[in-house]
Length: 382
Image 1 (cartoon, rainbow, N blue to C red):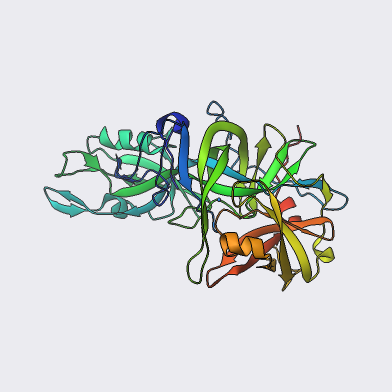
Image 2: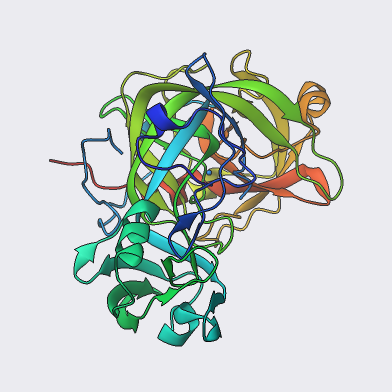
């Protein structure tokens, strides 16, 4: 899950199995980059559990949520796919390694106490948000001790980190693998025409290695053209693959465990006008439909069956969803990566969104109550 700064101009084709810039003690290691005359970015969907323009630096990561009630609230169920280019607030440690020096192998990161999943926010009092910034500081350290501020388990901490000189390339390194960005495909759940806000995914954008929620610095929403479907099968989740357009269509303002939230520049496509949202008490076992654009030919409505409803659930696995629609089964084999956020409609009301697929049975998965998503909607009142 990785993209670097000025992504629309600098990156054209990305191998999403890498999905971000990896740095070993400040050296960028992994990117598969090729030029594409279409000015688009080819990328695979990885959202199986997926802010602004580049001039805006506002951090919404610690913003308080506003609880929204479902009663009489009307939202437009969407179902169209979108691409997201996501940049983190701070850099995330995804691992560490030994550095070969003239004195033998040394692991400065381990010595300092830094661990996988820590988020480095400052070095010597200076904010660090990109791998390039971290790399420059380490390379220019001349081996002097660096004062590192970081976040672990939502708590601020600090430590001293001493780079060492690597014999392999005569550069100062710390043995830290870090990530500063990600990208992928998801589905828009709903759009609120009153304030142009939207929600999608039904779960957060998490680091592919650590599994932790990624802190948001800024993220751009773009259109995506689906070019390929990998069907789900027993033991292997399917996925949507597509092409990113470089034209911005919106921004994210919040990445939460219950979905992503943002603002769109224009009204998205939908098969429906605004529908009432259902409370969890209104949802019942039985037939429902899901909206999705899985083949890139437009949004369609597919039959599903809702069961095992846990009305006490305050998480993202609130009820079971089984795909029963023969057309969708023939296209995807069931629920695939990239469909997270697909809105679910029952009895003429928006009840929730698809969030997960069962690895051993891609025809089945889980959904989140729309009530739970709305409870985590950021307060956009000004």
